Structure formats: structure tokens, C-alpha cells
Amino acid sequence: MANQREYPRAKEGSNIGKIVVDRDLCIGAASCVAVSPATFELDGENKAVAIGPNAADDETVKMAAQSCPTKAILLFDKDGKQIYP
Amino acid sequence: MTQFKYLIIGGGVAGTTAAETIKQNDPSGSIAIVSDEPHVFYSRIMLSKPIFFLEKIPFEQVYLKNETWYKERNIAFLGGKTAVGMNAEEKTVSLDDGAVLQYEKLLLAIGGYPRKWDPQKIQGSDKKGVCYLRTLEDAKKIIEGVKTAKSAVCVGGGFVSFEACELLRMKNIDTTLLIMEPHYWANVWDETSGLIVEEYLRQGGVNVLKNEEVEKVFGADRVESVRTKSGKDIPCQMVVVGIGLTFPVGPFKDCMDCGHGIKTNEYLETNALDVWAAGDAVEFYDVAVGESVQLGNWVNAQVQGRVAGLNMLGKKQPFRMVSFYTTQGFGLSIAFVGDIRPLPDRTVITRGSRESKSYGRLILKDKELVGATLLNRTPEMAPISKLIEKDVDLSAHHAELADPNFDLKMLILS
Image 1 (cartoon, rainbow over the protein chains, first blue to last red):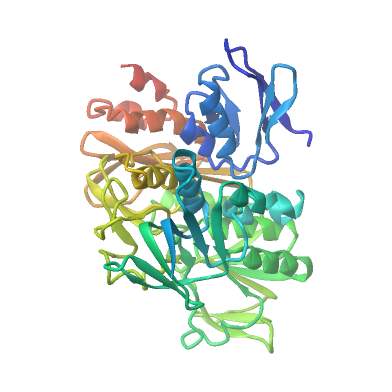
Image 2: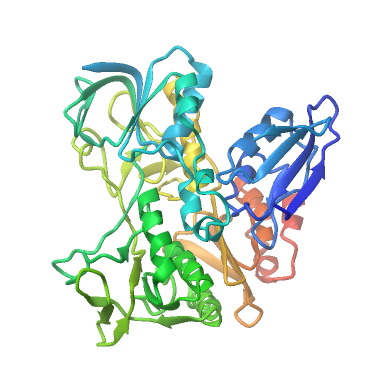
């Protein structure tokens, strides 16, 4: 799908190099916000945006992605390989 | 009799998240999930969303777990079975197929079910084409229905109707919405909020009729039209009914305190020994407001599932969260944050206006914010959640709260 927004992650020691939100899939359930409000917020269109891609540890970012009911959050490692979902 | 260390009634988001949490911490503990649906865990929240309904994504994407997931974790999934009885002394739950399951620890994550019309009271309401939305089967019926329907009637003023109206209009179906109340969602918020939603619905081509109810449904086998209380006949091939929820507490209510739902303390523990509850059917003691609260939304059920799972493992963890629910349709964003019940001891401060189509209601109890409803103001969800969480004393800031241009983030810093 085309409507994806990418958020590079530069946190030291992290295995996640990039967070991607698929805005076509996102329905604004806000489960990612509930898991990690430091990383995610909803914008004016009720879509998740990564306001702090470096704010949380890997475990929390993974949990936030896994909590999404439409699998709209994709995670990539430092080599650009998709690690979730 | 089959025995399980952990028995979970309900295969939705609360039950599945609890099972996942338990297995992460106690991999060898035996566990079973009983679900009255045959399907493995799927995204119920997606069922009413256009991307799913208009089949813009593969149908399979609705499933959030597959059978391998259960097998790998050694979680017994007992699908298509309904709990019909419970014995708290013997610690058993009986199912509709005659099986009796014994538990050491039990979680009731039984969910909410759409309230249905009684054909005795509304004649013809059991005809084909009268739809409710809870399960995958319900969704499939609606997906099929919208392919041929020329006109449809939605009933009820809530999230279900709002989302149903949008998908019907996306399919260019003539849509009439019947609301019993004088304005949209009158039992939840004020007239201004209701009128803004109605404006968007009308602009989107929905014929909104207020103070109206269906009196009779006509048609041979399938619905062909409905007659309203005021005597209007509306032709339609589909009726989507969203008039609230009921909670199937029947099999459990003799074993524990139940009201509308199942009552728990802040640890999601019921007053029956070794029994917890999570999700839409729970009336939990909310430490944030000091009251018993029932919430029906995805994120609440998910977090409650996690917390109940931890408590079943023996970790004493209170449930406390600011919950959210949002939807979007016809170009309007709606967001609910925290506890939005319009109780007599609440003070409501409004920001924005009907004219600007940007309108928020901040709900305070004593000096603190407890909830908010937001129309086209979703970005305020984040600062509002923080203000609720941090119990910020806002008694000196009512003027700022009422100013729609004031940045609420400023109050967190002060």
C-alpha cells in the first residue's frame, strides 16, 4: 500500500531501525498509544504518528506494534529487513 | 472432567491477551480458551471499518492469530462452545455440549452482545436483512447485503450506526438513520455535539430522522420496508440495528456479584474465589474516579486482559488506564478519552463551537479532569490523557480550558 509514513529510529543499542505506519490500515484504535504514549500519538485524522521514534525501548515498541488490531505498524531492523509483522 | 490450571471464557481481545500474558510467564501451565465463535482470534474492531467492509484488504487479514499460534503455546482453543453454568465451590464451568471443565483460576472475558429487537414487540424484526454487528458471520451478511441493496435504514445513535452509515453511503446506498432521542447520542453528550455529528451525516447524504423508532418491519422473507412510530414507510433492503449491548452474565451471576456486567475490584478480581473478569462485560472499581466503571472498547479490553493475566499469575497489579475510543467518517473525527459518563457531579467545560466544527467537552470531577469528548480535535487526546493520569488540579484554569486556542500541553508543564 502506498500511504505509508516512515519514522527512522536512531536509538543506541536498538535493533529497530525504522518504524512505519500504514495510514490506510490505521483505524485510530489507539492501542499503540496505550502501550507507548511516548512513541505514538493520534493526529487530526485519527491516524497514529510516531512522535518519539527513539523514546521507548525495543520491547515497548514491539509491544505497541503487536497490539495494533489492524497490523498497521511495521518494524524494520537496521538492515532494512522487516521484523514485524 | 478436563482440568486446566487457567480457564478463560471468551476468545476475543481480552481473553486472548490474557492467555498470551499467562503463557509468557508460566509456559507449562495448562490453559484453555472457550469461545462461542468457531474462529480463532480476529480483529472485531475492524468489522465496522471501511477498509475491511469494502474488501480493500484481503479478508484473511482480519485474523490476528492463526492455529499455529495456539499450538505452539499449547493453548487449547475450544471454539464454537458456550459456557452455560458455573459451580464456584467445585471450581467448574459447564459447556453447552455437556463438557465440564475444572479450573484452578478462571477468567471471564465474555464480552458484550448487540441488544436485539424482540419480534413480539417489533413485528417482522426477525426477517432476513435485519442486521446486527458483532461476529464475522454478521459482517459477512452485511458485506453481501451492501452489494445489492438500493436503500437501507440504520437504527440508533452511537458508534455502530455512525460507521454503518458511512459504509452504506460509500456504496451509494440511500441511507436513513432513525434516532429515538432528540439528537445524536443524547445520552452521552450535549446538543451541540449531537448537532455537529448530524450535520456531517446529512452532508454525507444520510437522511437523519430524530425522535423516531421502527414500529414494524415489512417484507415476505426479507425486509422490504419499515414503518416508523410516526407512520412513515421507508423502503429498504437492509436494516442495521445498533441499539446498545447486553452482557451474558446469566451462567455466572449466582456465583458472584453482577450488575449490568460482572463486578470486580481494581485488580479485576470478582468476589468469587480465583475468578477474574476482563473486557467489555466488566464493571471494575476505577481507582482514578473512586467509582465502579464499565467501558466497552478495544484498547480497554486489551489492557484489562493483560492486567487480569498478570493478576492470575499472582502479581498484584491494579488496573488503571485512561481509555480511548475514536472513529472517523464523513470527514469528521470523533474521540472519547477516559470517563465520559454524564454524571450529576461532573462539571463540563466546552471548547470550540458548532460553527467552527471543532468542539471539545472536558469533563471534570472536583478539581480534576476525568474524561473528554472531542470532535475534530483528536490531537488533544494526548495532553488530555496526561492531565487525567497525573491528576492535575485544574481548578484555577477553567478559563484556559474553555479557550479553544489554548494549548492544553501548557497545563502539564505548570
